[in-house]
Image 1 (cartoon, rainbow, N blue to C red):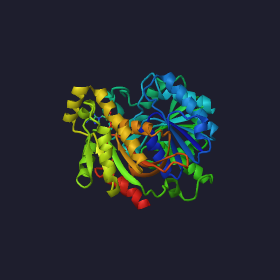
Image 2: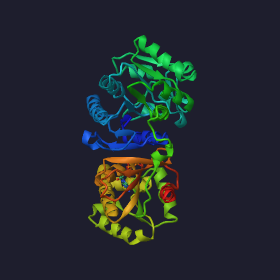
Image 3: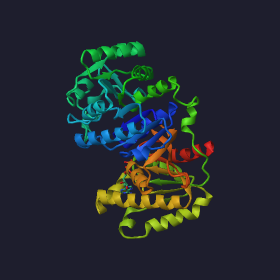
Image 4: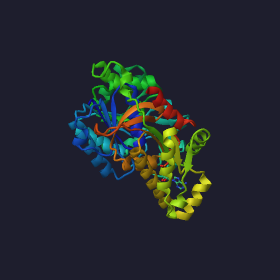
Length: 428
Ligand code: ADP
């Protein structure tokens, strides 16, 4: 293993893992802090540990991140990458500053960078100021975020409030001058006493230069954008397979396929509607679950009768007015929990019945499904849509293979479900 990554949330971890796979690194996604045993013997160039540490107390985020790094280092990681959101989601209490400090100590890094830029997604940094599209971060809507309101776009100031280490800035002019100039500038900053440098970036060429300039740093921190340039460092050193496409390879799967949808986002509502026009689908009603009807058993039976003819969709997805009605009757959390429990049971039943390609819509829903299936390690495959790759459950050889596409909220095009399944058929 070459690169050990720690991501502060699940979708961020998936995003980063997808980026590394596209760069030709065979990448595993591990859910929660791994033990050294979890990672022992795994074949991968990169491992991304997905934590849920973005908004937990700083001390807990530090403890989890350090435990993750310990396991990654024991498995052979040579470089550490700490991944956070491209909008630098954090508060003055942390967690980006405290986790960076702790990982610097653990990796022996005297200096690192902080670069959340992801220009393809509209996140660029100029003179240390983060822009979301054309707006400063602090005027982008992020100033109203319920948990991590970002009211200051100057990342040098934002990060300096989170750490006792000195924060500096590598300006766009040196980044644009290329990797060699930037590496020299980073050394000068370090000699001047800067421990963490915010780095400007306006496009992919900048990210590639940053990746190259940071090849020798024990720790790099940033959004998934800055990971764009990292695989090339390992490829140049002759440490990656010659064919980058190999990293995304998936086995041919010939079992049944199914879609479970518990997301009520507008994108998912459109995706469910598009699927229903052409394929069998069944809606499950949270009120019937609450009334004690055997919804799980009957919908599983419905699916098992149809799977031999082709893929099916089971969904709780509903329009906002219907969701409100259910939530008023049952309570928000209870309604969510009832639906998630049924989705989790369906996933178990479907996989037991020979489903080997499962598409799941909804972040929480995906979490419930992954937990119910007892999965803690997923091999990342080809991208379906930005931010959503196919993943293969890493399981003992006696267990049949299982591919999962976990799509949160508003991700994916309208034909996402059919497109995802067709992609694997084409690969087979
Ligand atoms: P997203 O990624 O779109 O936020 P999640 O799965 O994270 O999707 O969250 C959706 C939540 O809504 C889940 O807890 C799910 O169980 C719940 N839910 C799904 N369908 C309904 C419904 N018809 N009424 C009420 N809650 C629902």
